[in-house]
Length: 153
Image (cartoon, rainbow, N blue to C red; front, side, top):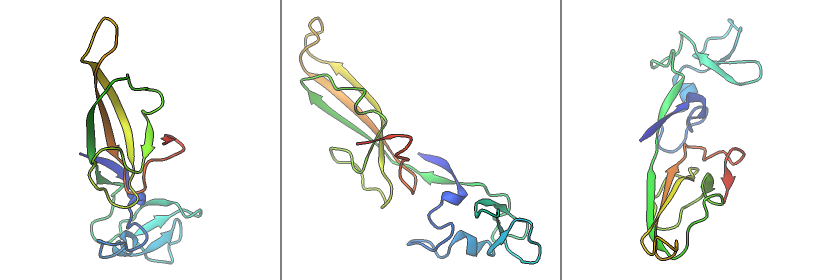
């Protein structure tokens, strides 16, 4: 699974990082400030320093690029419990690493519990017995899940 992320959020956008040969800004021909025609560069930033666009002068086919695909990993944990899980205190929470044996993700990425379901495998009438619980997690993009939008575990 992959999701689309803004190109300016790429870990190698402004600096060379492990696994990348150069920064995206360098590979595109350098940076210019919007409206400054005296300098040549392929990446346009506004006066506040926010990315605006790749110019027609951008090297390496960056002109028009606005986003990139960020591969994601999903992890499903299935286990037995004698009690019903508490929905409100777990879903939409960020975890550095979920319980169980999740796959290893690159540094900086975190996990978000996206779904929680359960099935009563015991006495259906008294709502007691053995429950099969399923937790579903999704890894974040390179910068982790936003802890202002989602809860922190």
